[in-house]
Length: 331
Ligand code: TYM
Image (cartoon, rainbow, N blue to C red):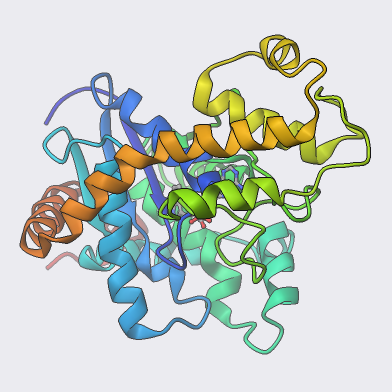
């Protein structure tokens, strides 16, 4: 095993992945693959906190893994696996449940949002979901967790749980740090720019999916909600335009000043077209690689299997240490 610091992150295969997932998270992961020991998981166990169609969940699990690879993650250099293949996640989550307070979980904003959204299915898993997420991270003693801004509260909780456990027994877990990208940590909906872009948005025009075809991407950007002004610049009064600038910048590397200069005197029409075309061009190679990966299921199964073996090796060690510390009799 290397002595590089570890990274852990994951995406739920609960819907079509958006450019929010891509910009805020997945596309940043490849930068770490040389300097850290990276572990990236398709978190299918998190996905069932909301009702899923089984066949679709299965398909999306493969798709999410394929997107990891298509976004530049080399399965030789990174451990890529599926959460339910490594049972220690659930086992550690149970123990950590007993070191997490009801009050702490009640304060999670994502729980509050999701219980409003799925008011007929406010199940216990939805409530304890951040504990499973803490288990994901702590199981691998990850030092760094690259995520979008919406996950920071869960990472704070994981830190609190780790500190509590370490304080009760002795140094057991590495206390993880969240890592959010400098720009693009929160991509907003194209239809309601005050709201986060989300996989589960019911309005198909609100989110651009990584696998949308070129025309769809361009059409969605043309329809993006802006305001009645025409000038392109960033301002709290212009959440729609500001969001488009963030997306454009993420795909071109251009600064706000460069974007303002580029569209000076041009108006929103030209700007929206440029953003749409740039995003479509940027996603084209990802989509191409994705298609070829999805045509080779056996290869993806091999990656999953190999990844689960590597992950299990670490997970087993951490879990047995935790079991020993809490006083479970070893087998
Ligand atoms: P999930 O599946 O909702 O999102 C996956 C990643 O995408 C980021 N993200 C965004 N970033 C910018 N703008 C957006 N609009 C946007 N929407 C989503 C998320 O912040 C995330 O990084 N609970 C996690 C999955 C998870 C996990 C973990 C992550 C489970 N265990 C352990 C890290 C470590 C989730 O639901 O992400």
